[in-house]
Image (spheres, rainbow, N blue to C red):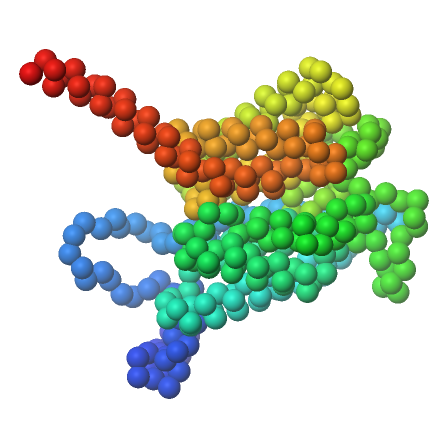
Length: 393
């Protein structure tokens, strides 16, 4: 690493104040701090919180927690493709390689479009690059259908960075999850590419021939919404993730491995994760009691492993910026996300997933929840103080 450090030291004067590339210092600083720990220290007086991990390292750990979902998603893309053609004698590696070829361009486009937009805003505003997009750049491809056109993904990513984050002041100021903002943009702007049967599985051959029309590539929730109870996969298949769906959302097992990493490192909020699953389970129990349609008849545990419920609970709802900040608020916030997600599934057959809308809605409500939690704490403390004042008086 020493030669790389020396190279950066030689280039740095060109980007510092007075250098010929001064305006591009935010871009240089982003690369330097990505490779090496910043070598500057605070000079202001006062109390400071010192920790061995900074924001960039936190974001990298979140990306690492997403790797199990990414790897499984690559394999599942290949498996679903070959299964659509009735090809069963395909090795694990062949499935993985096929999926990797399809998924990697999505990741490249996501990071390319998002980081370019971040660099432009950093140069215009003359501030350093924020690290938040390290996670968003990985989340966006994982919550997309495999057949989403690359140009649409680029447009959605740019929209998410500008409208979902930069207009609020950048990383740490956004009120909506940027990755879900990108998905919501595509869902409402290009619904044919985000719904239906054909977008969840890559059904084209090298010659561009599509799979036979008799094959259905609908997600399990899509089949359930249409009343096809016999097409819903078993709970074990749903838990492992061998089902059609977005690139990285199908495997609850992979999501739980990622959750373990987040909880072990102290980055993820167990309060939000647990309350999302609790809210979803309770809502599913209530609907299961009535059982008026196919979605209501799905068992509560089965609901929790279908679609993107686990992925949303672990990686989306726990976004530390757009979620609630108080401990009590986290329980309320997560519980309502789980409750609303199942509610949207059952009562909106046109959009049987529900997790995206539930999280975005609660992102907007998060400040209100925190406000009332804080107000309740203040009132409770005042009640303890007033009797003392009255007694002394």
